[in-house]
Amino acid sequence: MAPGLNVGQISSNSWAVSSRGVNGRFTNKLLVLMDGRSVYAPTFPVCIGMFRIRCSRTSSARSCSAVPGHALGANAGNGVINIITKSAAATVGGKMTVGAGSEARGSASIRYGGELGDMGHWRAYAKGFDRDGSVVEATGAAGQDTWRQQRAGFRTDLAAGNIDKVTLQGDYYTGRSGDTSMLNFLTPPFNVLAQTSQKVSGGNLLGRWQRDISATDTFTVQTYIDHIERDWPAHVKEKRDTFDLDFQYRTRRFAATIWLPAQGIG
Image (cartoon, rainbow, N blue to C red; front, side, top):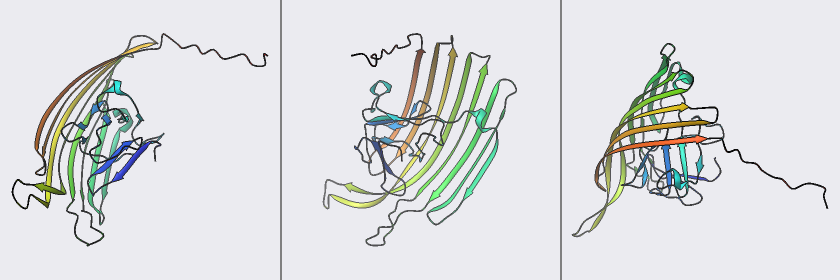
């Protein structure tokens, strides 16, 4: 429902998400970040572990935007979606959800957070789901696109005095999804439409330090390491490790002055 974003569900486990009218399953001009960590897979121009969010003025995440910005990273020609998760201080206590149905056959999640004295807050979570495959309307045949995934993670937010903030967070996930793909060969029949199964697993660890130097200046240092393994018979087997280091300095010293034309003067 966010203006400028185009979202279309392709199968039970895949979506086409982009902005400004350029859309497709392998969209390579939209950069998606999770707390500043890229979830874009360069091998298959698509977002890793596609997730469902509400992107609006008051999102279920703390912040979500889709704006053009090549300066923020590669593949950002049509926009950037940066999903900023809630701090550990906003999720103190426990929460558990369980669901079942005909399409979303089963899902469960549990989360618990607490305080670390005067130092800050922490939380940990685990969740998983099992979704049924779609059905081809014309023939009634199964779409062979079931989707199962499990993940767990943690986040710790520390505050050292009034000028330093430190965040450490990490996730691990594993899952499998079905897909009907065209397999190509060098001998007859040269290609065949077959059911394939894609296995994805990986994990990440992110650390961020923010310091308020003055009332107008602040800087942030963020680094993360991301590991992913993807086994997709219809394409290639992928194993990739990504290391990223980012430094940003912000200042409000140079306030802009806007001059307006005088009114009522001939």
